[in-house]
Image (cartoon, rainbow, N blue to C red):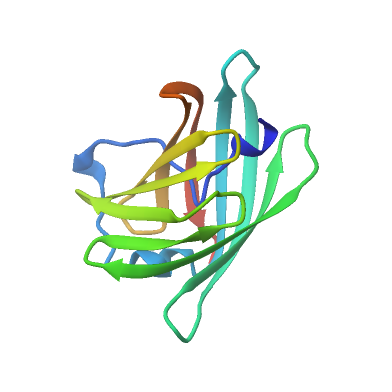
Length: 161
């Protein structure tokens, strides 16, 4: 279950819809350097801190390629890779090396909902709420197994450049 703790692309503490700041081009938020800092709580375990630093770029075909260095407290650092593209109005799809199958992202009321599966029959849902100014976001992540919540994460994502 160590690999599921993080799943966080980016990352999320769900703020109220009133504070959501819509982004004109959400993929561009990830261009350059970003940092995600969060706390993860897995059922029956002590909460721990996680931090990821990412570097993203938009490829000529319009696909976002994001590489993150993930540092979970007490674990060796690892690399997470995302490839995300626009798939229609308010919808994005792609891959992430720790996901089993596609990553689906939908814009809902100015917030972004990420959904994907992971090993162990785990379902991940992450909400990212852009903050005013477009340089940061709040994140809330929930991981479920057989419909039961087994882990939660709250955090902040910010652009570093």
